Length: 225
Image 1 (tube, one colour):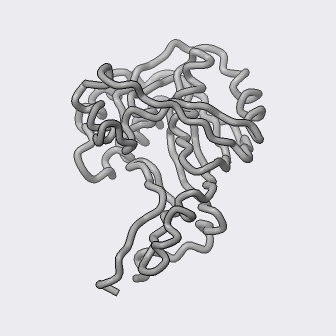
Image 2 (cartoon, rainbow, N blue to C red):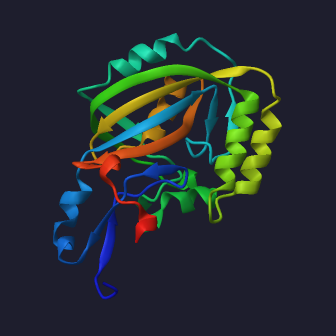
């Protein structure tokens, strides 16, 4: 087993969890097919804040509270349509041989043009709309960012969140189930909503539940190996 070559099809962001396909041995000849499989996610989108990473693991900005009742109608209009979005600045997509996140960390994004991508959203279900208080949000941020391993500006990000979260108020959270073509960033949808409706938006949580016919309910527990 140690001599077998191995690769994974489809990255997971540091703040995400769920299904990750490991392609082993001779099956690597079908790598591109696995990479192109549609993916399904359960996501929570937080309204009222934007970040430079489009999720909680980014430097945040609070937005003035505005009505977000049109967001639901927009989300429900997406199934079956092509959706064009800008790739997140903090992603592994390479430009001139360098991942986008490195351009971002070096403050050199103004030297390049971040590409846009178009994918088809096959299905989208709004499971529910809830609210989260600033206290709950603060606790969640500390827990999630504290669990991230590696250098992702955690100290600076936690400090910035603590500066803008005063402990008062509550914010809308849209919980969705979405299935889309390979290459789709749910983070980009969250940021797109915030910009389109001038409310701010970022990803609160993300779980990848399916890749093609590979489902989280049937996935082996990695601790069993």
